[in-house]
Amino acid sequence: MDDLRIGNYALDMDIASDWGMKIVSAILIWVVTWMVAKAVKWAFAKLVDSIAFLQRDNGGGDSVGGSLSRIVSLLVWLFGWIAILTVFELDAVTAPLQALLDNVMGFIPNIVGAGIIFFVGSIVAKIVRDLVTTAMQTINLDKWANKAGAEQVTGNSTISSTIGTVVYVLIIVPVAIAALQALQISAISDPAVTLLETILSAIPLIIGAALILGIAYLIARWVGGLVGELLPGLGVDRSIDAMDILPEGSTASSIISKVV
Image (cartoon, rainbow, N blue to C red; front, side, top):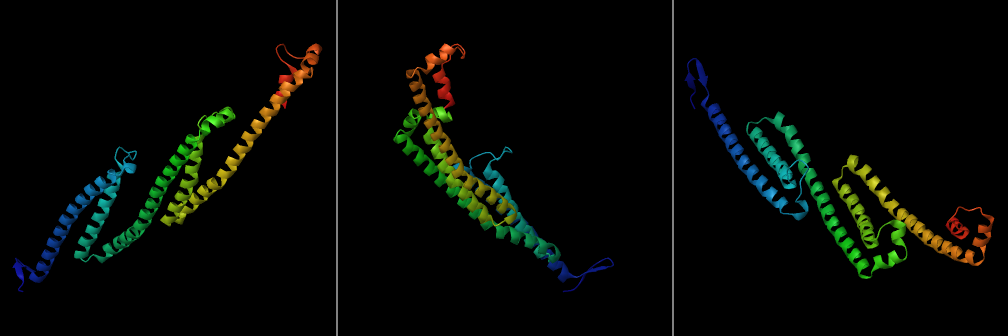
């Protein structure tokens, strides 16, 4: 094709045609990217906000769906800009962007997998917690435990709910560990997993210590009650009162039973 002369300058029509096609292609890609990004952002926000578990504020006045949809929209724009730069053969610019995009896309399955593990695990943990709590309430565990003095020991009148919460923690902590390991980011997952494993291993010890203290309290109260009933019958209170060494209104049997 002949060159087009503008004054003293010659314009290569092949080059002009090539650049014209590139510009048109870039504009079309930009328009398509804008349309796809808008559509994906709207659809993803609607999808996420339709899930009851995710219907909450992210702390910045926006919904979880709105925040995640913006991230998805930005990923679409990243694809679009790489395509536009590729049209203009700007390899020096597209190479690092392409590497970044490859890393992001390679990491998305880990995020999705971790999210699914934690989501499903949390649902299972809640179901098991409710089952355990309901079963304990069905057999009137709270009533019998409070009669045995559990409420006096712990100040908690709903032992069934506490047992349900313990079961929930015993399930959700391993689930959280599995979700963190699915991310495959050792810098984040390793310290968090170590912490969660420490908490998980400490839970049986805490429960055991609480049981020992509770049983010891019940035994102590029973033995103290026996001592408090036995000593007056042996004349201990009368003998100590005769010595006039106790404050008025106090008895030797009550003090000795508390000491026991």
